[in-house]
Image 1 (cartoon, rainbow, N blue to C red):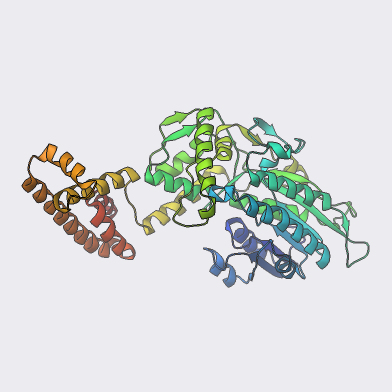
Image 2: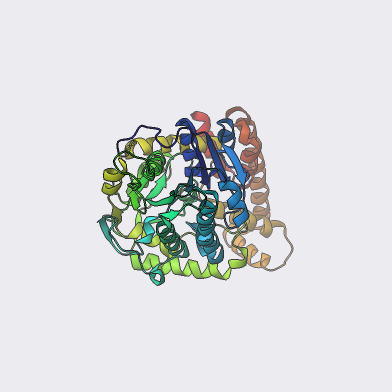
Length: 478
């Protein structure tokens, strides 16, 4: 396509489902920058890290549930083009909530398609996933000619539901307009690689959290396994170009939009091993890279065990006290099996070329999460927590608690090393005094170097003592 930068955007009205999310908010801001008359963000959430910025830039917010048809019809009324980004079940505990996954990804997409037809929307860009053609099968430099994976072979409900939804979207392409005779409804699908960038909500924060706690102990698969990533700005560019590719008034094409009914793979064009991709990020945050390796079959076995445990706990999946699963089978395939695609079709038909290189994208991402780390409470791994909490509890219980199970056993273990109750009690009092003193010192120091987290430093140091204090001292030196 040879179009102006704002073709089909300037003076037009847009709706973005999932508009308060990481990609959705970036897309809304880009549409505003390019001169859109109206940008409407439709989301289940009331707020997000980007919501205030969106409102300041004139983005209109509509709260609603994609699985509620009336909410969808209200959000899509009076717009020229829809970007359908809202989805559920991509990672973590969400992947096991099968009913909600289908309700949002399949039924929600049906509601979007019907609302577009009812409201006379002309263009729909659907954000799909490369998993519509991937279910653990090796793919090297794949393209859009690859067939859909049979629905019963998908390894997770998210990929299955996105495959169904994408096929519905593409088969709806060319539907005659209900309101305007001679006009049609055009659709296309964008299949992004794993998305990264400053503020990404799903993959990177989870990996950072695991690395911080020391729960990222091993790599999965061979070191030559590669997959795609896409920087958020590159994906937003592809989405904007896809909306232009659905215009039916391009000179020389008549009523045949170039992107109508088409899927497109989108990436940075630099397939890389997942753990090598993460290396500069983890190093930039002073976290350890996993040193051991786990074969694909063993990782799958481990993931299936975790999946069974979390499935048993299905009624509590939405509760905050239940942590995210360490690993699930679908995630094993994503990092342990080579699968990457070229964006040649998007380049030839839409004019897509990544504007941000992987090096630039990662540098910006690292800077963002370094700043986030500086603003948050830092601390040791979960092993230090366990050692300190268990050790202190054991000493205090053995020294002062009555003979209630398992206190006699703990007391016997302590006396085996210390030989005397007097020594045990002196040690317990000394340890408590040290923790209190270190906590007070940490609070006073934090008031100077990290006032926003001073209370957190006090309580963390009260529990962990020097294991916490050393992180604050390191911050004070900077």
